[in-house]
Image (tube, rainbow over the protein chains, first blue to last red):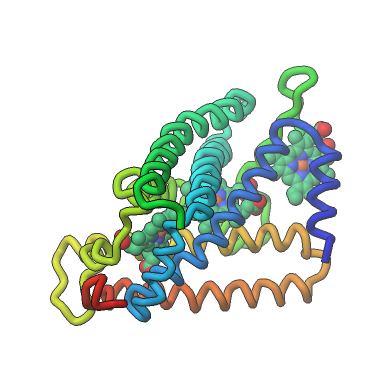
Length: 136
Length: 152
Ligand code: HEM
Ligand code: HEM
Ligand code: HEM
């Protein structure tokens, strides 16, 4: 049962280098989004099949814990999207292979550029909501 | 996996060309991961930004979904059909991309135990199929009728 954890820990300690850190992040963020997506599609389809349950899930979206979780989700989604684009472009265009280090650095920079305003706006909206509605 | 040294002291992953594979399905799935990923950049990010940055999670209301999906039993507008198509495409691509991603991860960790690997994937695919079917049905039936108050 512990094999996955041990493999991940051993492989990431054994091989250093920015490539491996990004690989691990790509994996963890991809799995994170999948888990969210499963519960999300279920919750949204309840808008048709079970409106009170749907409303209950929307209410969960408006709690402080979820607001924090959302910021993590934003980070996962945006990193995975940018890094995934890097992987797809590089692998489909072998001519660019000597640019890999630059591409790696840019995928981190672009992630941060997209993420910073997103987090700022989300945090601002959440804080002003809890300031007027109180914490529930 | 081989590695190349680009600058002394720093290694980066040597990206693979289209994998040498005996299996056409694997090749198709490999291509699918790249192209669905590129499509999802637009779909998933636009959706996420719409719900958070434009609407804001705390303003999300049932009425918004009724507006975009339409309401069960009522005539559908062209606009609602476009929203449904957008969500349907995103749902199918994201679920397929996600499942194939999970399969890769499962293979890396459980590939040496075929029974565990297969069992795990059957469970994952079954759960995903049920949830997706529900999601698509919900989309094309439209949201339930009634206002917020009537629902409580
Ligand atoms: C589970 C999947 C993977 C396994 C089992 C694996 C295994 C290995 C092995 C056995 C080596 C040594 C081979 C050699 O030096 O020629 C290696 C090197 C390396 N791999 Fe992977 N690899 C995996 C995925 C990746 C991915 C996706 C990346 C990049 C994003 C990556 C980045 C590297 C790097 C940078 C090295 C060179 C390390 C060094 O020279 O110190 N690996 N990997
Ligand atoms: C937003 C745009 C996205 C892009 C550009 C993208 C791109 C990619 C690419 C190119 C891979 C293959 C990586 C490899 O073979 O080394 C991948 C793997 C993966 N993706 Fe995505 N993806 C996106 C969205 C998503 C979403 C929405 C989910 C969740 C439903 C997801 C879950 C995964 C998972 C679980 C993996 C497997 C990770 C691994 O093998 O380590 N991705 N993605
Ligand atoms: C916390 C962040 C998110 C919120 C608040 C949110 C909100 C919503 C809402 C309100 C709907 C109902 C449709 C509508 O009113 O327009 C919806 C549907 C949907 N969302 Fe999200 N979303 C989020 C993140 C995501 C992510 C990251 C993905 C994909 C990777 C995603 C994929 C979908 C899909 C596929 C549907 C259609 C579901 C169905 O047909 O049953 N959502 N979302």
